[in-house]
Image (tube, rainbow over all chains, first blue to last red; front, top):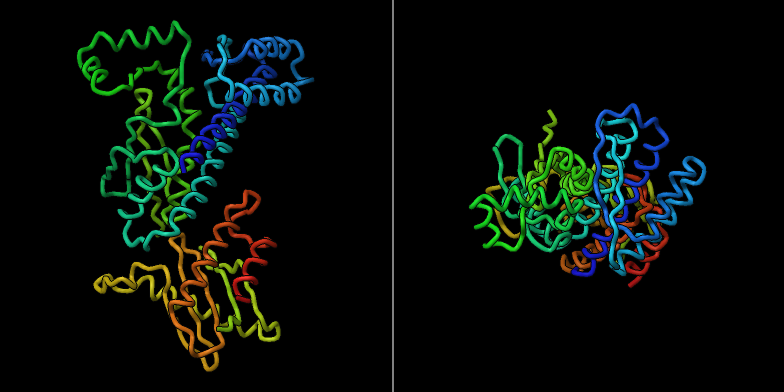
Length: 262
Length: 137
């Protein structure tokens, strides 16, 4: 099982990076002056990829596909080698265009299918579920351990069809980073308060408070896990919609709202 | 133990796979399979006051006997129903339960195929060959 979730991580990151790059390249095709907000995130790449991005800006519509293939290959190499990295910048349109909605849909469906199939495999040896609580506990414990190596920290309900899975240290977004200046800004907010100092002493994780724009970009990494939860629950027979709130970086709360059929 | 027919019915009670060893009687088996779906619902929605081990197991045992056949059922946690029709009168529950568990394993392999679309008939050759192998043993 330990081999499977590291592969899974790699696959998820590659797919999300690929998708973000398609948005990036397509956004350059659209008129950049019409965008409302511009948000810059830094992701870490090799020097070769910096050169490729310059080429992209020159070529635009013609060679988009070829470049994306190259980048995919380079990303895979990067994942294996982990060299010293430079910091180019990607630009993002934050108002939801059709393209973005399409991509969000696709990411969610990827997660949905993943959730369905892992639920099938893992539910094989479990006794029959009889109550809703058992089904939620199945997702919170068994699926989480199989995919992320640990259980959900907190599972709460409002007894009216809403269930909340709270994970203190969510594996998929744990190592997301920002530009050096932004990170210093974020962390310096933290270090002044006593509570956070105590927290940091207790746990090894440093919770990073983000700006609104950074949170919006973080959302794009959380669509796949939302889909996973929705897929696993629908395989067991519970139809729901799943949303996620992420205030501090590794701390996420997934909310599943059950759809009652009457 | 002669398995005359094996069927897999999906979550929305749609047939996904039917195997018959006697193709002439295929329609008869389809009727029997359709009838057994009622028994599945009955067993799954039975009273919670009788919380014995049988409530928790996936193998539902003998669903109903007809004149010449015996029909066994197995439901997965994801609401896939496996129905097995046998021709002989002397098979034990444990043997059939083992057989159905191995079919469950094959089913999971077939469902995890990334090219498989949910709620469509299972066309996989590997699955079919696996089923034949288990039956002939």
